[in-house]
Image 1 (cartoon, helix red, strand yellow):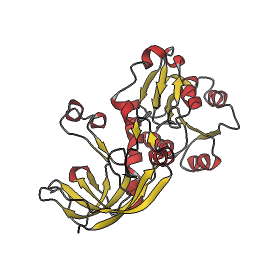
Image 2 (cartoon, helix red, strand yellow; image 1 turned 45 degrees about the vertical axis):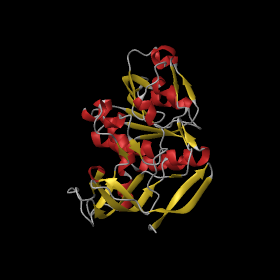
Image 3 (cartoon, one colour; image 1 turned 120 degrees about the vertical axis):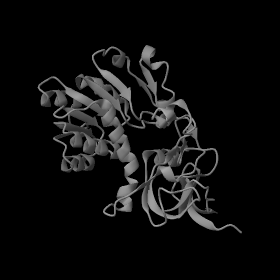
Image 4 (cartoon, rainbow, N blue to C red; image 1 turned 180 degrees about the vertical axis):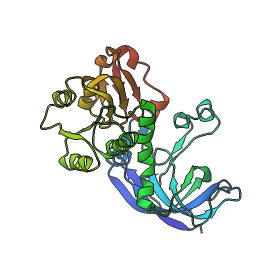
Length: 315
């Protein structure tokens, strides 16, 4: 009988169980990794609460988790990049490597990508996973497994800031001080931008943002966000806006608080929420793009109706 290992398996919305599943079979180009740390992403919460995230619907039991790190315990016959004992951060999305996007370095848009904990592909809340070795990244000894599991969400902030064209001393507003907002703050600081204004409705998040280096924090429940940001910028607005909350109000505020600048949408948004935003179309001075808006599908298949109707949907 095949060896069984433990896994957190989602059977239906609000039905998460500790099950026994089969030990994965190792392919020649894979490494067997003992999972040591897994972060909980907003997508995991959506699947747990709703049984779906946008077009991705839970149709059979699914192992959750994709923000992960672990230790290599065995390697396949073709693997040379890692060895048993290596501590690794794990990239959860594995593309086909053959399509136009993959061959042009944009593999996050690969239509055949297999992404952990996105139906029908299982995730990493399990004792062991078999994973292609070229999507494992060795961690320095100074990095903990918990820190390694943050590499994937950190990459969202890195990608957004790289694409934005952000430059030193540019003023920035980050609308949303959750995990993605905070890793974006880290990258904005690394570029040397500032002042940086963080907006949220949760005091504890704003307090942490301030400790992490935000110049100003605004509680949207207590202050008018648009008026406050304009007051802090001499009435002009900020050069760059990163929307990381996924709420209708913050999506609209991106344009209202920006001067001639760049808007970046990072958040996963809220399921079945439509954003009516004709004001985006009437803002020709601004460069607007979506880095991680809606779901992964929205990166692969942008809504053709957006440019003409000013409508975006997270479904």
